[in-house]
View 1 (cartoon, rainbow, N blue to C red):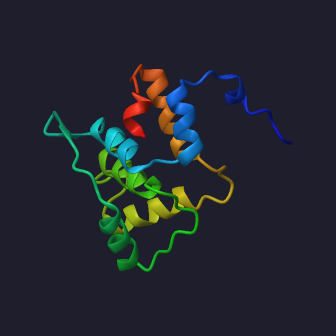
View 2: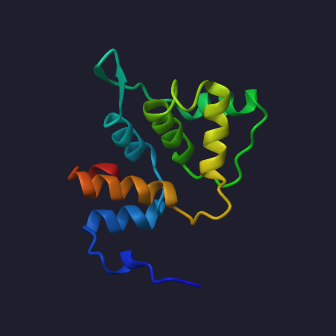
Amino acid sequence: MQRTNLTQFDEMPEAMVTYMRHYGPHFNRKLYEFAVSKMYKEKNNKREKISPINKDQIKNILSAYNITLYNDQLYDSAYVACMCKADFLGSSIIDEKHMAMYIKDVIDDEDAYDGIVFNRWYADMCYTGVAIDWEDML
């Protein structure tokens, strides 16, 4: 059953419309860097910002475990890797190999829709009240 995409009723700022025209529901470099700048890892009862993982590092991690992504676009896998690093690595994701498998599971999820990673992130930003200067993301 095809459901109605309720986001069609949203009003987007002009700069967000421009962003979507250029990149669709995916992370470009600037938006990826912005998103990662908001990520933290709890260590010793302190919140520490995580360091970004660049696309070359992602490529090396995936190739070390013979993992190929088929549906990756722009910086989506880099965002997923950083989200995993911030929220799961060292807990339910025990090591780099399992992080690579997690990235594969999220990016190549067969029943996911195009842009699911971006849309989930954007929903979190809206819900938590984080303002996004879309002009800066272009």
